[in-house]
Amino acid sequence: MVACFEVEQGRSRILEASWIVQNDQDSSAVAGHYARHQTWRKIGAHLKAALSGGSPSLLSRIPQGGITPDAHGNSGIRGVLSGTHALLSPAGGHECLAYSLELRMFWQGQELLMYRDAVTSGLRVSVPTGQELRIPAGRLRFSTVAPEIVDVDNLELEAYLDIVDPMRSTMPGGSPIRFNVVREEVLFAGDTVDVTGDFYLRANSSEFPSYRESPSTYLRCRGIAQLGRVG
Image 1 (spheres, helix red, strand yellow):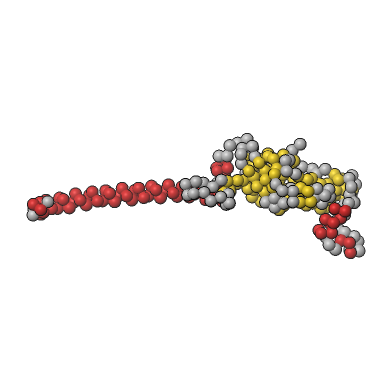
Image 2: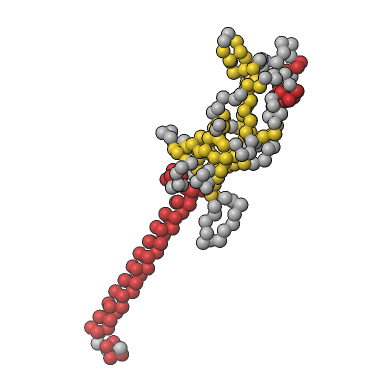
């Protein structure tokens, strides 16, 4: 090396060769970093979609059999209910997971809907695919026609209406909610139901797996879910 450096031409060739080797190494490092960056961007995009429910393709990867999207993007799930019976149905006085109450007026050969209420204290639906749909406490919609309650004048219903309209007993013309037909649907743990809604996957925040593992997921419904008893 010392002898070569004494000749300017040899020294130039060595410096040029060294620069080429170093430049190739730098280019390889940049290319590798770019490839890893693109890979992590794709992983991050999929993870963000899974957590926010923004990717229909993720839902479509769930094994079919219990989830069938319709033309409007909604899906239908059939499963078995579970949860705690924390509600008391207004007309029947049943401890339940959810209820639907309809007060109607039969007039001129038809039933006119005067009042409707449908809520749940929170329930879970076990899907045949192994997934679980969780519906938090709140409003529901019922797709089935509730059966008629024969005993219209009962203490449970009167107490419920006093909560809905505390002033009804003091109004000159009586309660504005007039009815002569009461319909009520009640759901219990173990019932089989069809649920329709816009479902998405959500990560289980109660789990803290290691960085190599992914948390388990469950299904949630955007907006208000619609339920209907089967059988």
